Image (cartoon, rainbow, N blue to C red):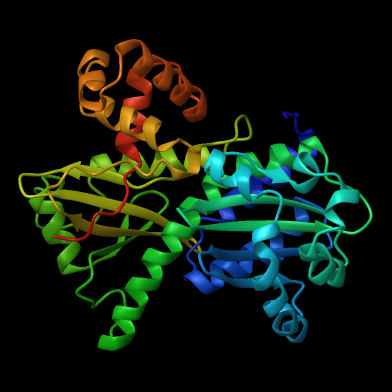
Length: 365
């Protein structure tokens, strides 16, 4: 189901997106998302959950919050969550699209379920829609929107599908920042004097601070050839300027601010970009030499589509990919055509660039 947003909705969305890349640790990021999403999707209750199905276990946060009611209802939701009518759709599509309960089951049937009687009814919910951030073999993480009196509209679907890759990238950034802040706290250090690889810069690329480890990695990967570092290296300055321009544009809904990576003899250098008030943090991380599979979760690719585009990014032809995956070149092409649509690109070269710009962690060197 597709729908166009109004000009006002688009402006609200554009303002919201930039806030997702502001410096926040994981708990603060989750709280921000829950407390601000009401400005984009009108609803009575928003939740962010981690749902495990084998065995049933649910952890979740609400906005507005009622911790007493959450605690009281937790046994009921864990006992009945397997009945949620959207679970087959979520597992089949890997969370690629937002889904509302009424897409898969009418309200009259929903009310017969124990899940409704023991949980939804007690939080005054008749209509529910979710955006799925992560899907595992027996688990998934949704942001769920709940209403009592009216169902969600096509433009709500459109809003959530545009937001989903930004939710996920923002969550990745928040987890990375949480890990850094934890290490700093344990060592009783600040950003400026830490042994973490961190650069703080202004919008114009002028360096505020650069840790010794960051300088070492810039030299190692050929991004820095001078001793005095007052400005970002040209490649990083161009990247920063490009990303700021994209996120502040009023003409398009931008792709997420993904990390940038550089290949070296011993591994990969990944750099994340996070906004902190009037400045930017660049978090540098060195990764193992093993080829890094792209993080394509935000785009809803199936495992087979992910395999095909991963080999594509390594320069393999359709014939070579077919031999590797034991399928015909024609089937490879069909997989890739679906990939292009999900990545919103036109051809294999554009897909390769996007895949190489969005990598998934495989551990530090």
